[in-house]
Length: 342
Image (cartoon, rainbow, N blue to C red; front, top):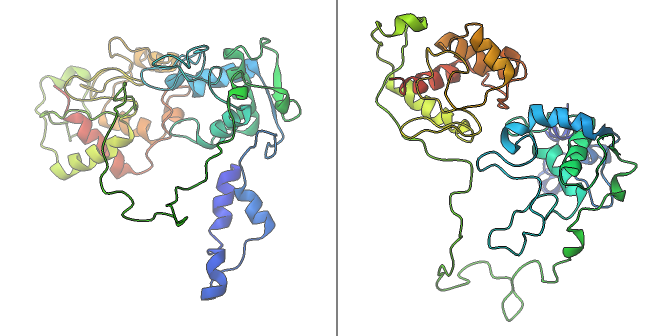
């Protein structure tokens, strides 16, 4: 269990300390309980756990857990963040802000990977894995040049990112105040006007997918050769609507409907009853391609098994999503995807 999740478990035992005296509820947190929540890492190394990891080890982990979004070499996939390169672009109209060109401190890299990565399965990395991935990111940005370089708590503070010296403390106060010194809490400005627009729009990896009119097969799973002759049975509209809502978890990587294209994951039109790893133009993992070659067909049954635990059903799949535990949720999303089968 990660340090963060341990903190959540401990916090469940405690009421808000500030209200304990007022309402007679709960108790003040102990130093040990506060420590479990305190997982931030500072530029001076305070907060770093024991651990170590080499560039070579980090490359293997990065390819398996991170490359699906960030590319094998940190170049980014689709609209997902670029992690390497971009040096000398900060004065450009569209700067490339990466670990090597922009980020201030190595602690920021370690802390973010530890807290939030990989996408869809945050805080599943061990401390050694975070050290290894961070070492690999340093290598990709030419901060270190030896594949045998090992990053650990002992040498962590010796590493300096190229843009560190260009960051400085903001001298402004924390909040805006009026002339009399009182904080403005409401009715602070009579009119708000938009004076500028971003030069690059729609950069977030999340798009609305268009709908379709086709229905999925709600009966027993059919072999691919039987699909053409079979008449689809009607599907409960409420189940489809529920699946559309659940599919929002998938939109960051997949598109479906009119104009759907490959993104981090393949487009999902005509998914039901087609062979695994068969969408033209998408680079699948070797394990998924092997499964398709062995005869895996995406039926309602096989899709449900895959969506429950993708990395258990097909080891080393690029799909980073942890899975859907609820059988009802899996049935709903499969019914929704079935609408896009021609």
